[in-house]
Length: 75
Length: 134
Image (cartoon, rainbow over all chains, first blue to last red; front, side, top):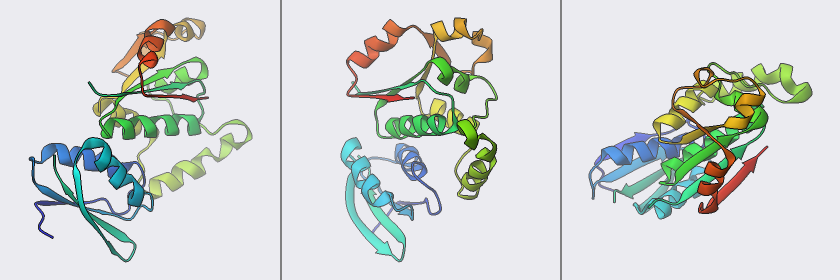
């Protein structure tokens, strides 16, 4: 998938991936796509919930081993 | 206007300290307006340089948990506190507790505000989420 930036949150536990995700998205422009990498098992539910809450669009999720890749379109 | 998350912390042990900050920090990252009110034994969590310990007989084992958290790349308590402030989490010290425990404003972490119960309840009354950690 096309992406404008990648945030590597591997090795970080909840709530750090979400905290960093929120910070990163703030720095980006509307319509840009962010790839988020995370291996915290909570991220599977947390990232969609965060997107739902904040209005940023979750375009898709891929799993690569234990690493989850989220593609988020910035609001 | 952003929806509010209000948390009351009434105990000063490590678990309450970390959990309340994690929830407030996550809330702020989700676009909620986060307010945390520290009362009674919770107040010491706002004192400069505080290193909270596990409660009761587990106290001497605090270092094991902080060590493990460090290995897992989790921030320490003071770092978490600063991060919460940077993310716009509002931290409040209970004014009555301050008098009871002889704590002055200069003892508190910079960025903390002193409030009374009615000012806090005024916020809590129209918050979507109210949590009590104690």
